[in-house]
Image (cartoon, rainbow, N blue to C red; front, side, top):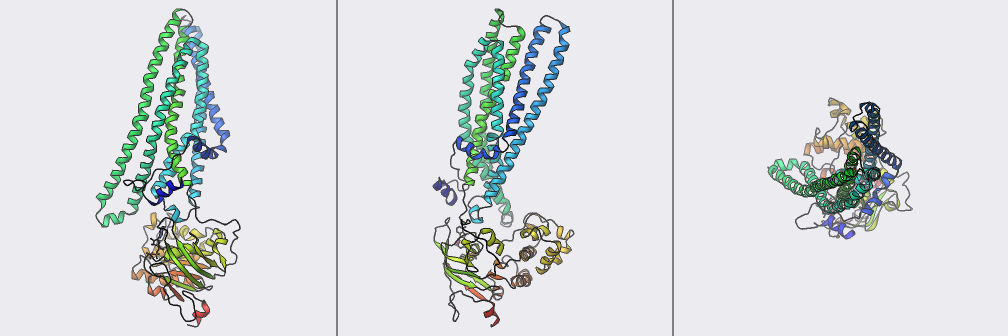
Length: 600
Ligand SMILES: Nc1ncnc2c1ncn2[C@@H]1O[C@H](COP(=O)(O)OP(=O)(O)OP(=O)(O)O)[C@@H](O)[C@H]1O
């Protein structure tokens, strides 16, 4: 299973299909075992829904029985006097049946929706245990498809599926008992032909499962391509490649259409076959019924009621066999969700991990080697050693691909080194809890990430309890207060997706304000001026200098002006080894802190 997953992550499963590989198959029992826990807490409601729906089915039996009496006691003997009491009963029972069925359906939906909510929340919670690189091994669009349509399909099997099966079975027993009671020879004849329905359901269910699996995968591909295409729309426009993007989406859409149609052909053929079987069954009943009628073993009302029961009987049978196809689709969805939940974080709290306390900010790396399992496995950082005293600033430079961002990931524990150690105040980060590491270290990533929320909430993202005054102060420190206050809604201006209303420099200053508010003793700044023109870059210099003051900072940068703010520079070679010849009296990349800085 692991090998299959690995393949889906690193290389295409098939040459023509690099985007979304099929998830490994999972048995129905496994599907149930995995997903039942999300229903278990609501099992009382599940029982209530089933009982209400079963009671509704009981009401239908009584209505049909009263209908039989109406024919035999009013219509056949032409006695109008008997009509009113029977009609009154029928109306009352019909109203009660309607109410019970309504309550049953509503409760079933309640259980179903809560299942979806819980499972989706649990899946998202799991995804948030994964560091960004692990999450990136799956296409975001495909992950979205798994969290939406696949979860709904699983629900249709595990939650409402259970209610449907239970209430269909109970209805089946009710209607079958009533039919037996009316005429056992006729009922037996019906029971003998029933397995034909069951066998056809199994046949169709299996085929739908296979076809649905492909349709689910195609669905994930369409979402993945859509997401990527929209995210890169500006490139497509700038390079006149809109047609190509449209073509790509169309091709994926056509493949999904073919997969959905193949599923629909089988899924839709099934009710058609069932209809023919139903007519044949109905004709058998009418023939046998006429015979029973002629020998006086059945009344006209009895025969019509029997036919009505039979129609009612087909409902649950159809429902049960429909479940077979629903299960096909559900298990295909379940496989994809389970595949997602099997992703494991390579970075976890050790059993003896303790929180970092009162961090002073002495940061060091000793002989660090790091590599990615998703690449060729070769180290991207080798033998990196440095020390930054509390409050010191270390600039990290080097050619593209030298491993600078990888170093940033090590410092916030998005990954762990293969050899050597990253130490904060002398504590190996692997011995500290993840939460406390991230409480002590603020990462300002290369790409500024803003949420579709107010500027205020974006600044307060790392400290939701911050007061308005603290937020404004952080914005002032980041030179962002002026432009924020000039916006029509000021701090309450809501940013569009990726902060579209703001310029690159303004976005960067909002993220710097966010970092100010966290006020952690250690900062990791990954190319804080990347993507900004010279003027915009100059505007963030002041805020960055203020942000770094008094904080241990690792400053990854290509900009010489920014590197000049540092007390020492660690240059990385293209192969991830440190390039610096050691300054007199110091080891490679080693910096001894503010004392040394003061002496410069
Ligand atoms: N998630 C990943 N999986 C596999 N390989 C990766 C991953 N992230 C980075 N790499 C590889 O690791 C090497 C170092 O990448 P890194 O992003 O650390 O370089 P960098 O020095 O920050 O580059 P740049 O200056 O272009 O941002 C590169 O060869 C890159 O291809």
